[in-house]
Length: 563
Image (cartoon, rainbow, N blue to C red; front, side, top):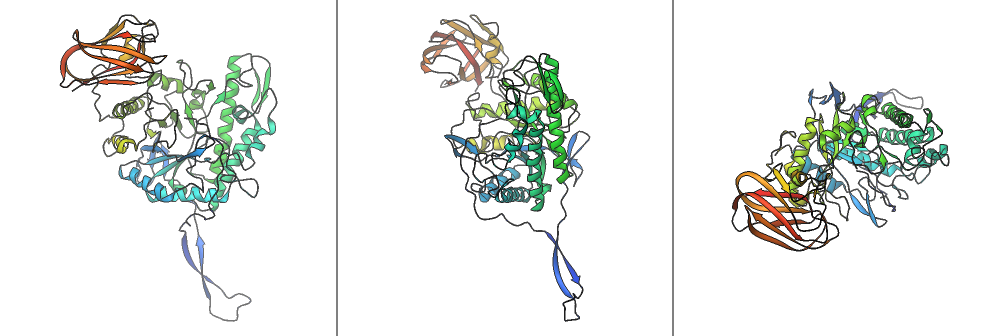
Protein backbone atom coordinates (compact mmCIF):
# COMPACT_ATOMS: atom_id res chain seq x y z
CA UNK A 1 0.00 0.00 0.00
CA UNK A 2 1.65 3.24 -1.08
CA UNK A 3 0.50 6.17 0.97
CA UNK A 4 1.28 9.87 0.68
CA UNK A 5 3.65 11.23 3.28
CA UNK A 6 2.56 14.73 4.35
CA UNK A 7 5.24 17.22 5.38
CA UNK A 8 5.68 17.94 9.05
CA UNK A 9 8.51 18.70 11.42
CA UNK A 10 10.07 16.13 13.74
CA UNK A 11 11.76 17.34 16.90
CA UNK A 12 13.93 14.47 18.08
CA UNK A 13 14.54 13.84 21.73
CA UNK A 14 17.97 14.63 23.06
CA UNK A 15 18.17 11.27 24.81
CA UNK A 16 19.91 8.34 23.19
CA UNK A 17 18.66 4.79 23.03
CA UNK A 18 19.29 2.03 25.50
CA UNK A 19 22.85 0.74 25.21
CA UNK A 20 23.30 -2.80 23.95
CA UNK A 21 24.89 -5.31 26.27
CA UNK A 22 28.11 -6.44 24.55
CA UNK A 23 30.22 -9.43 25.46
CA UNK A 24 33.14 -8.56 27.74
CA UNK A 25 36.48 -10.21 28.34
CA UNK A 26 39.15 -9.56 30.90
CA UNK A 27 42.59 -8.86 29.48
CA UNK A 28 45.97 -8.60 31.24
CA UNK A 29 48.17 -5.77 30.06
CA UNK A 30 51.91 -5.80 30.50
CA UNK A 31 53.78 -2.95 32.19
CA UNK A 32 53.86 0.13 30.00
CA UNK A 33 56.90 2.31 29.54
CA UNK A 34 55.51 4.83 31.97
CA UNK A 35 54.62 2.25 34.63
CA UNK A 36 56.51 2.41 37.92
CA UNK A 37 55.22 -0.92 39.27
CA UNK A 38 56.07 -4.45 38.38
CA UNK A 39 52.54 -5.84 38.83
CA UNK A 40 50.36 -6.08 35.73
CA UNK A 41 47.24 -3.97 35.26
CA UNK A 42 43.85 -5.64 34.69
CA UNK A 43 41.59 -3.90 32.17
CA UNK A 44 38.20 -4.75 30.69
CA UNK A 45 37.84 -4.52 26.92
CA UNK A 46 34.68 -4.77 24.91
CA UNK A 47 34.41 -7.39 22.19
CA UNK A 48 31.47 -7.40 19.77
CA UNK A 49 30.96 -9.89 17.02
CA UNK A 50 28.43 -8.89 14.42
CA UNK A 51 25.63 -11.46 14.69
CA UNK A 52 24.51 -13.61 11.81
CA UNK A 53 20.87 -13.55 10.85
CA UNK A 54 18.78 -16.27 12.48
CA UNK A 55 16.32 -16.72 9.61
CA UNK A 56 17.74 -18.09 6.36
CA UNK A 57 16.37 -19.64 3.17
CA UNK A 58 16.86 -23.30 2.37
CA UNK A 59 15.18 -25.18 -0.43
CA UNK A 60 12.79 -22.34 -1.25
CA UNK A 61 11.51 -21.91 2.32
CA UNK A 62 12.40 -19.93 5.41
CA UNK A 63 14.22 -21.83 8.15
CA UNK A 64 15.30 -21.01 11.69
CA UNK A 65 19.03 -21.74 11.73
CA UNK A 66 18.94 -22.37 15.48
CA UNK A 67 16.61 -25.36 15.12
CA UNK A 68 16.69 -26.22 11.43
CA UNK A 69 12.89 -26.06 11.42
CA UNK A 70 10.66 -24.12 9.05
CA UNK A 71 9.98 -20.51 9.99
CA UNK A 72 6.53 -19.11 9.31
CA UNK A 73 6.41 -15.42 8.45
CA UNK A 74 3.23 -14.42 10.26
CA UNK A 75 2.48 -11.01 11.69
CA UNK A 76 1.51 -7.43 10.95
CA UNK A 77 2.51 -4.13 9.46
CA UNK A 78 3.29 -1.87 12.41
CA UNK A 79 2.63 1.87 11.98
CA UNK A 80 2.32 4.85 14.29
CA UNK A 81 0.38 7.64 12.61
CA UNK A 82 0.54 11.28 13.68
CA UNK A 83 -1.09 14.43 12.24
CA UNK A 84 0.99 16.05 9.54
CA UNK A 85 0.21 18.64 6.86
CA UNK A 86 -3.52 18.12 7.01
CA UNK A 87 -3.16 14.36 6.69
CA UNK A 88 -1.19 11.69 8.45
CA UNK A 89 2.34 10.34 8.51
CA UNK A 90 3.81 7.16 9.89
CA UNK A 91 6.38 8.12 12.51
CA UNK A 92 7.03 4.76 14.19
CA UNK A 93 10.79 5.28 14.30
CA UNK A 94 10.87 9.03 14.82
CA UNK A 95 13.00 9.87 17.88
CA UNK A 96 10.31 12.38 18.86
CA UNK A 97 7.41 9.93 18.59
CA UNK A 98 8.77 6.47 19.37
CA UNK A 99 7.19 5.05 22.51
CA UNK A 100 9.18 2.05 23.77
CA UNK A 101 6.65 1.11 26.45
CA UNK A 102 3.70 1.03 24.05
CA UNK A 103 5.79 -0.78 21.45
CA UNK A 104 6.87 -3.39 23.96
CA UNK A 105 3.25 -3.99 25.00
CA UNK A 106 2.22 -4.41 21.36
CA UNK A 107 5.07 -6.83 20.71
CA UNK A 108 4.08 -8.86 23.76
CA UNK A 109 0.48 -9.10 22.50
CA UNK A 110 1.72 -10.38 19.13
CA UNK A 111 4.25 -12.82 20.57
CA UNK A 112 1.85 -14.42 23.05
CA UNK A 113 -0.52 -15.21 20.17
CA UNK A 114 2.17 -16.91 18.14
CA UNK A 115 2.94 -14.18 15.64
CA UNK A 116 6.57 -14.10 14.53
CA UNK A 117 7.14 -11.04 12.39
CA UNK A 118 6.52 -7.31 12.15
CA UNK A 119 6.98 -5.12 9.10
CA UNK A 120 7.92 -1.49 9.71
CA UNK A 121 8.85 1.48 7.54
CA UNK A 122 12.36 2.83 7.93
CA UNK A 123 12.18 6.31 6.44
CA UNK A 124 9.15 7.47 8.37
CA UNK A 125 10.19 11.07 8.88
CA UNK A 126 10.24 12.35 5.32
CA UNK A 127 9.73 16.07 5.50
CA UNK A 128 11.02 16.37 9.06
CA UNK A 129 13.70 18.93 9.77
CA UNK A 130 15.92 16.57 11.70
CA UNK A 131 14.17 13.22 12.25
CA UNK A 132 16.06 11.38 9.54
CA UNK A 133 18.49 13.86 8.04
CA UNK A 134 21.68 14.61 9.90
CA UNK A 135 21.39 18.14 11.33
CA UNK A 136 25.14 18.51 10.96
CA UNK A 137 25.35 17.64 7.29
CA UNK A 138 24.68 14.82 4.87
CA UNK A 139 23.71 11.40 6.12
CA UNK A 140 21.28 10.09 8.72
CA UNK A 141 20.47 11.59 12.10
CA UNK A 142 22.33 9.67 14.86
CA UNK A 143 19.26 9.85 17.11
CA UNK A 144 17.18 8.25 14.37
CA UNK A 145 19.67 5.39 14.11
CA UNK A 146 19.62 5.03 17.90
CA UNK A 147 15.83 4.69 17.80
CA UNK A 148 16.01 1.98 15.16
CA UNK A 149 18.42 0.03 17.36
CA UNK A 150 16.12 0.37 20.36
CA UNK A 151 13.22 -0.87 18.26
CA UNK A 152 15.32 -3.87 17.20
CA UNK A 153 16.19 -4.64 20.80
CA UNK A 154 12.53 -4.70 21.79
CA UNK A 155 11.68 -7.07 18.94
CA UNK A 156 14.55 -9.36 19.90
CA UNK A 157 13.48 -9.35 23.55
CA UNK A 158 10.00 -10.51 22.55
CA UNK A 159 11.24 -13.10 20.06
CA UNK A 160 9.91 -11.24 17.01
CA UNK A 161 11.68 -10.67 13.71
CA UNK A 162 11.55 -7.42 11.74
CA UNK A 163 11.07 -6.85 8.04
CA UNK A 164 12.40 -3.32 7.59
CA UNK A 165 11.18 -1.61 4.44
CA UNK A 166 11.98 1.72 2.81
CA UNK A 167 9.18 3.76 1.28
CA UNK A 168 11.40 6.37 -0.35
CA UNK A 169 14.63 8.29 -0.03
CA UNK A 170 14.53 10.56 3.02
CA UNK A 171 13.94 14.22 2.24
CA UNK A 172 16.93 15.12 4.37
CA UNK A 173 20.48 13.83 4.23
CA UNK A 174 21.50 14.86 0.71
CA UNK A 175 20.13 11.77 -1.05
CA UNK A 176 17.78 13.61 -3.39
CA UNK A 177 20.61 15.88 -4.52
CA UNK A 178 22.51 12.78 -5.60
CA UNK A 179 19.45 11.25 -7.25
CA UNK A 180 18.77 14.37 -9.32
CA UNK A 181 22.26 14.59 -10.81
CA UNK A 182 21.30 12.71 -14.00
CA UNK A 183 17.82 14.16 -14.44
CA UNK A 184 17.20 15.41 -17.98
CA UNK A 185 14.22 17.64 -18.74
CA UNK A 186 11.69 15.82 -20.88
CA UNK A 187 13.38 12.44 -20.35
CA UNK A 188 13.99 11.92 -16.63
CA UNK A 189 11.85 14.42 -14.73
CA UNK A 190 12.83 13.11 -11.32
CA UNK A 191 11.36 10.86 -8.65
CA UNK A 192 10.34 7.29 -9.45
CA UNK A 193 11.25 6.96 -13.12
CA UNK A 194 14.67 8.52 -12.71
CA UNK A 195 15.34 6.56 -9.51
CA UNK A 196 15.38 3.26 -11.35
CA UNK A 197 16.64 4.29 -14.79
CA UNK A 198 19.53 6.66 -14.06
CA UNK A 199 22.94 5.97 -12.55
CA UNK A 200 22.49 8.84 -10.07
CA UNK A 201 19.17 7.44 -8.85
CA UNK A 202 20.81 4.11 -8.19
CA UNK A 203 23.80 5.81 -6.55
CA UNK A 204 21.52 7.73 -4.20
CA UNK A 205 19.85 4.51 -3.03
CA UNK A 206 23.20 2.82 -2.49
CA UNK A 207 24.40 5.81 -0.46
CA UNK A 208 21.27 5.79 1.68
CA UNK A 209 21.54 2.07 2.47
CA UNK A 210 25.27 2.41 3.12
CA UNK A 211 24.60 5.13 5.69
CA UNK A 212 21.82 3.10 7.28
CA UNK A 213 23.63 -0.24 7.56
CA UNK A 214 27.01 1.20 8.53
CA UNK A 215 25.30 3.30 11.20
CA UNK A 216 23.54 0.28 12.65
CA UNK A 217 26.68 -1.84 12.62
CA UNK A 218 28.56 0.98 14.32
CA UNK A 219 25.89 0.90 17.06
CA UNK A 220 26.22 -2.88 17.45
CA UNK A 221 22.61 -3.37 16.43
CA UNK A 222 21.05 -6.81 17.05
CA UNK A 223 20.95 -7.71 13.37
CA UNK A 224 19.85 -11.22 14.30
CA UNK A 225 16.41 -9.71 15.09
CA UNK A 226 15.98 -8.77 11.43
CA UNK A 227 14.12 -11.08 9.07
CA UNK A 228 15.14 -9.09 6.00
CA UNK A 229 15.76 -5.68 4.47
CA UNK A 230 13.16 -4.62 1.91
CA UNK A 231 14.70 -2.21 -0.58
CA UNK A 232 11.33 -0.65 -1.41
CA UNK A 233 7.87 -0.83 0.11
CA UNK A 234 6.43 -1.04 -3.41
CA UNK A 235 8.43 -0.63 -6.61
CA UNK A 236 6.56 1.11 -9.42
CA UNK A 237 6.96 3.78 -12.08
CA UNK A 238 4.77 6.51 -13.60
CA UNK A 239 3.24 5.60 -16.97
CA UNK A 240 2.21 9.25 -17.42
CA UNK A 241 5.74 10.67 -17.16
CA UNK A 242 8.83 10.32 -19.38
CA UNK A 243 10.31 8.11 -20.51
CA UNK A 244 7.35 5.71 -20.14
CA UNK A 245 4.96 8.32 -21.56
CA UNK A 246 7.07 8.73 -24.71
CA UNK A 247 5.91 6.90 -27.84
CA UNK A 248 8.89 7.61 -30.04
CA UNK A 249 12.61 8.34 -30.08
CA UNK A 250 15.49 6.64 -28.33
CA UNK A 251 16.27 6.98 -24.64
CA UNK A 252 19.66 6.26 -23.11
CA UNK A 253 19.51 4.96 -19.54
CA UNK A 254 22.16 3.53 -17.21
CA UNK A 255 21.65 0.09 -18.80
CA UNK A 256 21.50 0.93 -22.52
CA UNK A 257 19.58 2.68 -25.28
CA UNK A 258 15.95 1.81 -25.97
CA UNK A 259 13.43 2.64 -28.71
CA UNK A 260 10.31 4.15 -27.15
CA UNK A 261 8.25 3.28 -30.22
CA UNK A 262 8.75 -0.41 -29.48
CA UNK A 263 6.66 -1.64 -26.50
CA UNK A 264 8.97 -4.62 -26.01
CA UNK A 265 12.05 -2.36 -25.76
CA UNK A 266 10.23 0.00 -23.42
CA UNK A 267 9.36 -2.91 -21.15
CA UNK A 268 12.92 -4.20 -21.29
CA UNK A 269 14.19 -0.74 -20.31
CA UNK A 270 12.15 -0.91 -17.10
CA UNK A 271 13.19 -4.48 -16.34
CA UNK A 272 16.89 -3.78 -16.92
CA UNK A 273 16.82 -0.62 -14.83
CA UNK A 274 14.98 -2.26 -11.94
CA UNK A 275 17.24 -5.32 -11.94
CA UNK A 276 20.31 -3.10 -11.86
CA UNK A 277 18.86 -1.01 -9.02
CA UNK A 278 18.09 -4.07 -6.90
CA UNK A 279 21.46 -5.68 -7.62
CA UNK A 280 23.44 -2.60 -6.57
CA UNK A 281 21.46 -1.99 -3.39
CA UNK A 282 21.45 -5.66 -2.40
CA UNK A 283 25.20 -5.80 -2.87
CA UNK A 284 25.64 -2.75 -0.63
CA UNK A 285 23.37 -4.18 2.08
CA UNK A 286 25.26 -7.47 2.13
CA UNK A 287 28.59 -5.70 2.21
CA UNK A 288 27.68 -4.48 5.69
CA UNK A 289 25.40 -7.36 6.70
CA UNK A 290 26.68 -10.45 4.87
CA UNK A 291 24.05 -12.96 6.05
CA UNK A 292 21.10 -10.63 5.43
CA UNK A 293 18.10 -11.49 3.32
CA UNK A 294 17.02 -8.83 0.82
CA UNK A 295 13.60 -8.37 -0.73
CA UNK A 296 11.29 -5.71 -2.17
CA UNK A 297 7.56 -5.12 -2.13
CA UNK A 298 5.23 -4.96 -5.14
CA UNK A 299 1.53 -4.60 -5.86
CA UNK A 300 0.12 -6.69 -8.70
CA UNK A 301 0.90 -5.80 -12.33
CA UNK A 302 -2.03 -5.09 -14.65
CA UNK A 303 -1.24 -7.87 -17.12
CA UNK A 304 -1.81 -10.47 -18.47
CA UNK A 305 -5.14 -10.28 -16.59
CA UNK A 306 -6.54 -6.72 -16.84
CA UNK A 307 -7.11 -5.05 -13.48
CA UNK A 308 -7.34 -1.57 -12.04
CA UNK A 309 -4.86 -2.35 -9.26
CA UNK A 310 -2.21 0.37 -9.21
CA UNK A 311 -4.16 2.86 -11.30
CA UNK A 312 -1.76 4.64 -13.66
CA UNK A 313 1.33 3.25 -11.95
CA UNK A 314 3.38 0.63 -13.77
CA UNK A 315 4.95 -2.47 -12.25
CA UNK A 316 6.29 -5.59 -13.95
CA UNK A 317 7.32 -8.42 -11.64
CA UNK A 318 7.38 -11.57 -13.78
CA UNK A 319 10.86 -10.87 -15.25
CA UNK A 320 12.16 -10.16 -11.72
CA UNK A 321 10.70 -13.42 -10.44
CA UNK A 322 12.64 -15.13 -13.23
CA UNK A 323 15.90 -13.28 -12.53
CA UNK A 324 16.84 -10.72 -9.88
CA UNK A 325 19.14 -10.19 -6.90
CA UNK A 326 16.23 -10.46 -4.44
CA UNK A 327 16.30 -13.42 -2.04
CA UNK A 328 12.52 -13.61 -1.83
CA UNK A 329 9.48 -11.62 -2.94
CA UNK A 330 7.08 -9.49 -0.92
CA UNK A 331 3.86 -9.25 -2.91
CA UNK A 332 0.84 -7.22 -1.81
CA UNK A 333 -2.78 -8.13 -2.55
CA UNK A 334 -6.01 -7.36 -0.72
CA UNK A 335 -9.27 -9.34 -0.66
CA UNK A 336 -12.07 -7.84 -2.71
CA UNK A 337 -9.98 -6.88 -5.75
CA UNK A 338 -11.63 -6.92 -9.17
CA UNK A 339 -9.79 -10.09 -10.24
CA UNK A 340 -9.49 -13.34 -8.23
CA UNK A 341 -6.34 -14.41 -6.44
CA UNK A 342 -5.24 -16.97 -9.01
CA UNK A 343 -5.22 -14.24 -11.67
CA UNK A 344 -3.34 -11.88 -9.34
CA UNK A 345 -0.73 -14.62 -8.83
CA UNK A 346 -0.46 -15.05 -12.61
CA UNK A 347 0.11 -11.31 -13.00
CA UNK A 348 2.91 -11.49 -10.44
CA UNK A 349 4.58 -14.19 -12.52
CA UNK A 350 4.19 -17.05 -10.06
CA UNK A 351 5.22 -19.73 -9.36
CA UNK A 352 8.70 -18.78 -8.19
CA UNK A 353 11.68 -20.82 -7.11
CA UNK A 354 12.15 -18.38 -4.23
CA UNK A 355 9.90 -17.85 -1.20
CA UNK A 356 6.99 -15.46 -1.67
CA UNK A 357 5.17 -13.72 1.16
CA UNK A 358 1.98 -11.68 1.26
CA UNK A 359 3.60 -8.67 2.89
CA UNK A 360 0.40 -6.64 2.80
CA UNK A 361 -3.14 -7.95 2.95
CA UNK A 362 -6.16 -6.81 4.90
CA UNK A 363 -9.89 -6.23 4.81
CA UNK A 364 -10.80 -2.71 3.70
CA UNK A 365 -13.65 -1.32 5.77
CA UNK A 366 -15.45 0.06 2.71
CA UNK A 367 -15.39 -3.42 1.15
CA UNK A 368 -16.24 -5.34 4.33
CA UNK A 369 -18.40 -3.13 6.57
CA UNK A 370 -18.80 -5.92 9.15
CA UNK A 371 -15.63 -7.06 10.94
CA UNK A 372 -16.97 -10.61 11.29
CA UNK A 373 -17.31 -10.83 7.53
CA UNK A 374 -13.89 -9.26 7.20
CA UNK A 375 -12.36 -12.01 9.35
CA UNK A 376 -13.96 -14.71 7.22
CA UNK A 377 -12.86 -13.04 3.98
CA UNK A 378 -9.32 -12.57 5.27
CA UNK A 379 -8.89 -16.22 6.23
CA UNK A 380 -10.28 -17.27 2.87
CA UNK A 381 -7.87 -14.89 1.10
CA UNK A 382 -4.88 -16.39 2.87
CA UNK A 383 -6.12 -19.87 1.95
CA UNK A 384 -6.14 -18.82 -1.72
CA UNK A 385 -2.61 -17.42 -1.37
CA UNK A 386 -1.42 -20.77 0.01
CA UNK A 387 -2.72 -22.47 -3.11
CA UNK A 388 -0.67 -19.99 -5.16
CA UNK A 389 2.53 -20.80 -3.25
CA UNK A 390 2.75 -18.00 -0.67
CA UNK A 391 4.55 -18.94 2.55
CA UNK A 392 4.18 -15.83 4.74
CA UNK A 393 1.53 -13.29 5.71
CA UNK A 394 1.74 -9.78 7.23
CA UNK A 395 -1.59 -8.13 7.91
CA UNK A 396 -2.21 -4.42 7.16
CA UNK A 397 -2.24 -3.11 9.86
CA UNK A 398 -1.78 -3.70 13.58
CA UNK A 399 -3.61 -0.74 15.12
CA UNK A 400 -6.46 1.40 13.77
CA UNK A 401 -5.43 4.55 11.92
CA UNK A 402 -5.68 7.44 14.38
CA UNK A 403 -6.89 9.77 11.65
CA UNK A 404 -9.32 9.46 8.76
CA UNK A 405 -7.70 7.27 6.13
CA UNK A 406 -9.45 6.73 2.82
CA UNK A 407 -8.27 3.16 2.39
CA UNK A 408 -8.46 2.09 6.02
CA UNK A 409 -8.60 -1.61 6.82
CA UNK A 410 -10.02 -3.33 9.86
CA UNK A 411 -6.98 -3.28 12.14
CA UNK A 412 -5.90 -6.37 14.03
CA UNK A 413 -6.67 -4.69 17.34
CA UNK A 414 -10.07 -3.30 16.29
CA UNK A 415 -13.21 -4.52 18.09
CA UNK A 416 -11.28 -5.86 21.08
CA UNK A 417 -8.72 -7.63 18.91
CA UNK A 418 -11.16 -9.80 16.97
CA UNK A 419 -8.79 -10.20 14.01
CA UNK A 420 -5.72 -10.31 16.23
CA UNK A 421 -7.12 -13.49 17.76
CA UNK A 422 -8.83 -14.95 14.68
CA UNK A 423 -5.64 -14.85 12.57
CA UNK A 424 -3.27 -15.90 15.36
CA UNK A 425 -1.39 -19.18 15.61
CA UNK A 426 -3.25 -19.85 18.84
CA UNK A 427 -6.70 -19.90 17.20
CA UNK A 428 -5.61 -20.84 13.66
CA UNK A 429 -2.58 -23.08 13.89
CA UNK A 430 -2.30 -23.48 10.12
CA UNK A 431 -2.81 -20.18 8.28
CA UNK A 432 -3.74 -22.14 5.16
CA UNK A 433 -6.74 -23.81 6.83
CA UNK A 434 -9.59 -21.41 7.72
CA UNK A 435 -11.23 -21.90 11.10
CA UNK A 436 -14.12 -19.51 10.49
CA UNK A 437 -17.21 -20.78 8.71
CA UNK A 438 -18.95 -18.40 6.32
CA UNK A 439 -22.65 -18.31 7.27
CA UNK A 440 -23.57 -16.76 3.92
CA UNK A 441 -25.93 -19.22 2.23
CA UNK A 442 -26.01 -17.09 -0.92
CA UNK A 443 -22.31 -17.47 -1.64
CA UNK A 444 -22.03 -19.09 -5.05
CA UNK A 445 -25.75 -19.92 -5.15
CA UNK A 446 -27.89 -19.93 -8.29
CA UNK A 447 -29.06 -16.41 -9.06
CA UNK A 448 -31.30 -14.74 -11.65
CA UNK A 449 -32.21 -11.13 -12.28
CA UNK A 450 -34.69 -9.02 -14.21
CA UNK A 451 -31.83 -7.93 -16.46
CA UNK A 452 -28.03 -7.48 -16.25
CA UNK A 453 -25.20 -5.66 -17.97
CA UNK A 454 -22.78 -7.92 -19.82
CA UNK A 455 -19.88 -7.11 -17.47
CA UNK A 456 -22.00 -6.95 -14.29
CA UNK A 457 -23.82 -10.31 -14.19
CA UNK A 458 -26.18 -11.36 -11.42
CA UNK A 459 -23.59 -13.88 -10.19
CA UNK A 460 -21.35 -10.98 -9.14
CA UNK A 461 -23.77 -10.23 -6.28
CA UNK A 462 -23.16 -13.63 -4.70
CA UNK A 463 -19.42 -14.12 -5.38
CA UNK A 464 -18.29 -12.86 -1.96
CA UNK A 465 -16.29 -10.06 -3.58
CA UNK A 466 -17.50 -6.52 -2.80
CA UNK A 467 -15.34 -5.14 -5.61
CA UNK A 468 -17.69 -6.71 -8.17
CA UNK A 469 -21.41 -6.02 -8.55
CA UNK A 470 -24.60 -6.98 -10.31
CA UNK A 471 -25.80 -4.09 -12.44
CA UNK A 472 -29.18 -4.09 -14.12
CA UNK A 473 -28.29 -1.16 -16.33
CA UNK A 474 -31.76 0.25 -15.80
CA UNK A 475 -33.90 2.18 -13.37
CA UNK A 476 -36.53 0.56 -11.10
CA UNK A 477 -38.46 -1.60 -11.13
CA UNK A 478 -35.73 -4.33 -11.13
CA UNK A 479 -35.14 -7.50 -9.11
CA UNK A 480 -32.53 -10.13 -8.27
CA UNK A 481 -33.38 -13.59 -6.88
CA UNK A 482 -31.16 -16.11 -5.08
CA UNK A 483 -32.11 -19.79 -5.15
CA UNK A 484 -30.58 -21.68 -2.20
CA UNK A 485 -31.50 -25.04 -3.70
CA UNK A 486 -33.15 -26.29 -0.53
CA UNK A 487 -35.06 -24.99 2.46
CA UNK A 488 -32.88 -23.26 5.01
CA UNK A 489 -33.40 -21.29 8.21
CA UNK A 490 -32.74 -17.67 7.23
CA UNK A 491 -31.58 -15.63 10.19
CA UNK A 492 -30.76 -12.35 8.45
CA UNK A 493 -30.30 -10.70 5.07
CA UNK A 494 -27.52 -8.21 4.29
CA UNK A 495 -27.42 -6.02 1.18
CA UNK A 496 -24.25 -4.12 0.23
CA UNK A 497 -25.30 -1.04 -1.71
CA UNK A 498 -24.01 -0.13 -5.17
CA UNK A 499 -25.59 3.22 -5.95
CA UNK A 500 -24.86 6.58 -7.53
CA UNK A 501 -26.14 9.13 -6.84
CA UNK A 502 -27.26 8.64 -3.26
CA UNK A 503 -30.88 9.22 -2.38
CA UNK A 504 -34.10 7.66 -1.19
CA UNK A 505 -34.59 4.02 -2.17
CA UNK A 506 -37.24 1.36 -1.55
CA UNK A 507 -36.35 -2.35 -1.67
CA UNK A 508 -38.81 -5.16 -0.96
CA UNK A 509 -37.52 -8.49 0.39
CA UNK A 510 -39.53 -11.62 -0.44
CA UNK A 511 -38.96 -15.21 0.72
CA UNK A 512 -40.57 -17.91 -1.38
CA UNK A 513 -42.80 -15.26 -2.98
CA UNK A 514 -43.99 -13.71 0.29
CA UNK A 515 -43.02 -10.11 1.09
CA UNK A 516 -41.34 -10.09 4.51
CA UNK A 517 -39.58 -6.72 4.79
CA UNK A 518 -39.16 -3.33 3.09
CA UNK A 519 -36.04 -1.14 3.24
CA UNK A 520 -37.16 2.49 2.82
CA UNK A 521 -34.73 5.34 3.35
CA UNK A 522 -31.74 7.31 2.09
CA UNK A 523 -28.91 5.07 0.89
CA UNK A 524 -25.48 5.65 -0.63
CA UNK A 525 -22.61 3.69 -2.15
CA UNK A 526 -21.24 0.93 0.13
CA UNK A 527 -23.99 1.26 2.76
CA UNK A 528 -24.92 -2.04 4.38
CA UNK A 529 -28.63 -2.78 4.80
CA UNK A 530 -29.40 -5.48 7.38
CA UNK A 531 -32.70 -7.13 8.32
CA UNK A 532 -33.16 -9.92 10.84
CA UNK A 533 -36.61 -11.42 11.47
CA UNK A 534 -37.73 -11.92 15.05
CA UNK A 535 -37.50 -15.64 14.44
CA UNK A 536 -35.72 -17.43 11.56
CA UNK A 537 -37.75 -17.93 8.39
CA UNK A 538 -37.53 -21.20 6.51
CA UNK A 539 -37.30 -20.76 2.75
CA UNK A 540 -35.36 -21.57 -0.39
CA UNK A 541 -35.59 -18.44 -2.56
CA UNK A 542 -34.96 -14.81 -1.69
CA UNK A 543 -35.88 -11.97 -4.06
CA UNK A 544 -34.90 -8.31 -3.67
CA UNK A 545 -37.11 -5.98 -5.71
CA UNK A 546 -36.11 -2.33 -6.01
CA UNK A 547 -39.18 -0.18 -6.60
CA UNK A 548 -37.64 3.27 -6.11
CA UNK A 549 -34.10 4.61 -6.57
CA UNK A 550 -32.34 7.63 -8.14
CA UNK A 551 -29.80 5.19 -9.55
CA UNK A 552 -29.73 2.26 -11.92
CA UNK A 553 -30.43 -0.78 -9.77
CA UNK A 554 -27.31 -2.62 -8.60
CA UNK A 555 -25.99 -4.58 -5.61
CA UNK A 556 -22.39 -5.29 -4.64
CA UNK A 557 -23.37 -8.25 -2.50
CA UNK A 558 -26.55 -10.05 -1.46
CA UNK A 559 -25.91 -12.11 1.67
CA UNK A 560 -28.36 -14.57 3.18
CA UNK A 561 -27.18 -15.68 6.60
CA UNK A 562 -28.29 -18.86 8.26
CA UNK A 563 -29.59 -18.66 11.80
